[in-house]
Length: 439
Image (cartoon, rainbow, N blue to C red; front, side, top):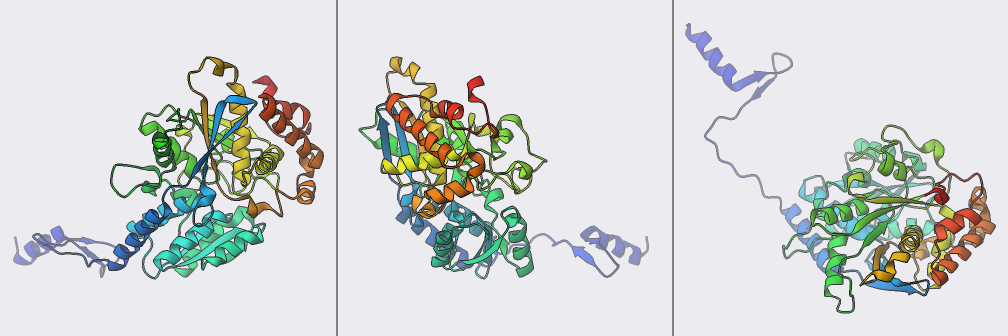
């Protein structure tokens, strides 16, 4: 073989021709040994996040009892007690930790996020903590108090249509060379959010924290909740709790409390809306921050993090019922937001469903849920009767709202099912929802 041809064949073993004749991809030859340059900024950012985790501690839990359900403990985990005032504080910690560890966020990165408000405020806080810029893409309908909250942590605001948030956030990040966090897609990837081990650096997983607190509470007879009930916006929280419960063999049943015009109920129970949008079924105002309907199909890992496989049951709640539940809770001293009202309405329904069997139970039925954010964000909206009359007119307005409040009060006194009695007496005939009388 000619020498020139032999040399050419040897060269081809180590190179691959790509594109035009001037472009080659070369393979490094063995033996080689090289260290990557140490990323001091990342190490410091991670240290700051762990210090924040230490300061976070554990959010408090409290118990609600009622004469109507004497054998049921409603346990609330008060996430409004976090530094940024909502459940999204721990969630944003996990997302930012993931993005820093995986190299998505570097020293000069600008982070973009699509949010209804709470996640944006918490991510703004975490980004300021590690020294990077943050821009939130929020719906035009966002409350001013939530805008002020985001700005207070150094975040910036871009408003857009509710259905356009994901698209706009992605566009802004691409255009400006930033990173789109995409809470709807990436909570699965924030491994710390749903994983807890025995490592001294304690996870932020909510179920891990809740069970640990129940185990250590000498006044708590039931150490594992029978039910965990929560609504879903991104689906990250309920999926992380469900994964934890399934992985560690807890008996806790995971219950999704879905809003009236959201597609999540059908996605979880019937496998629908994976390729179709629920936009045509959406009726505003909805329940701010929760439910899914106008942002296209539910695609796990793309537009949502809700994992149907770890949810045991789903309950669809009329929006006016959830709004009425917010008011009743506030009167009981529990100042919660939209998801808290939805959670509580579902919890009352579950308690009523099992009330007859409680007579033979050795321990009370324990239903755990979340006080996800403060009701102060909704003073001018969901706690405002004029706003309710104007925005919930299609669902019956104030007469239906007052009717739902009455049904909830009766449930707390007598143990009735407010979801069933309210559906019979308070719902408008043309409401879209489930007929609980046929269950």
